[in-house]
Length: 527
Image 1: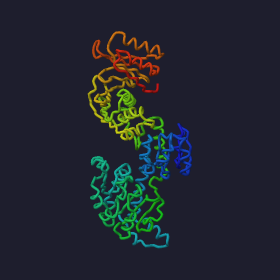
Image 2 (image 1 turned 90 degrees about the vertical axis):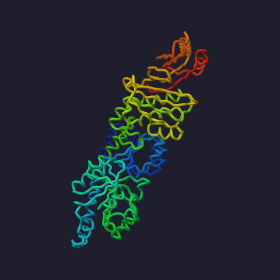
Image 3 (image 1 turned 120 degrees about the vertical axis):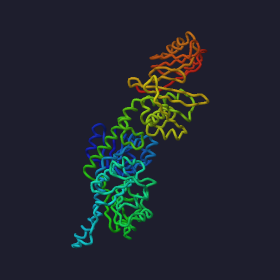
Image 4 (image 1 turned 90 degrees about the horizontal axis):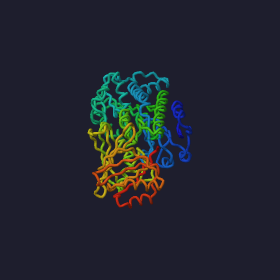
């Protein structure tokens, strides 16, 4: 496939991509040039300068994956990508150490006033008494956002004999304690810490996280560090607190506007300002490039990416356990959409047996993908299936059970239409999907591209007559299963076919007096 690298990427990452795909490195394209070029590509790689907005995504008609070589995805319209069924991946671990070390560098620089002292010496001054610093040992460091970078900082701050507090609603007290961290609420962190370091994404809730009110609650003379995202701090409020000496210093690596032309921080005292250098080490550039390349390769190969930010995330353990059932779930959704005949607003997916022990969200997404592919011309995949279903008023309830006898695993999809419940179930045998239940009938059959299903009166000769009619139309039968509710009552016959069934032939079979109902199911599965 074709990959467009729209911003500079370390050669090691490009080499990984080029080993399996056709890669064009075209940094510096204007927006119009990028929109004109993108329709040719299945993958796009960006860093932070290219803004992948809805217009660019719409132009990328063949795009399968967008890779952001870095942690955040602020410059990618996730909602538009999800609607379009495009997986967005990032590289959240490659720059962890670089960002942590840069944060600590800013902390040391502020505590010992290194930048100001350096400038003084260069002016020919020798004013040692003006640059008395602070020791970090025994001080309290507050970390807002205890993710990978926050944890790396905490590990190093423990070695500096600092006390570490943190705020993070998604981290347990036990996990925090493993890094020598005490979890507290935000107000407590502001009041107790001698230095506060921010490591959160820029969202509606984190924009302006540190403003006038928060600065007023901080300890007098405290230090503020931001190596996360511009906009997380109110730059004007921070500059004012520095001028009034309420804030002891600020180490800022990211700005609301970059470069920060006109920022009040530029002439504020006691600052160290760096041009977004958190990930700027030679080692981090290579690690980030290789990490994002690995993610793109996985997605283009049809596998789940470890760091997909808008798709069901699978751990290695979950991928091994759930992976074999994803094709089955998709088959059930596609089969159900045709077998039920009418639109269903609420469906239930029962996950029983082995897969019930794991995250079922990928199975839910796979069912929705199969269900929707029969009724929309939009590209549907595991990324946007949930969003497309919601837009159509369809909801799917997931239920789990450990009991799946006599099967090791059983997936059952059911829903009510016109007062009638439709139910389809399947399992996996030797790695292949098997249909095992259609409504109240139990069967055992591999799904086929084309299947003819009849519910008919169990009379002698009925099956033969249906076979003859298909034979006369040159439709070959490759497999068959018959299920009965009782002798000479009614029966369900499922025929796997090598050829499609012409509508006149289906109509003629349906007209047979013994045939109570008929379905032609076209799964369109790849052989």
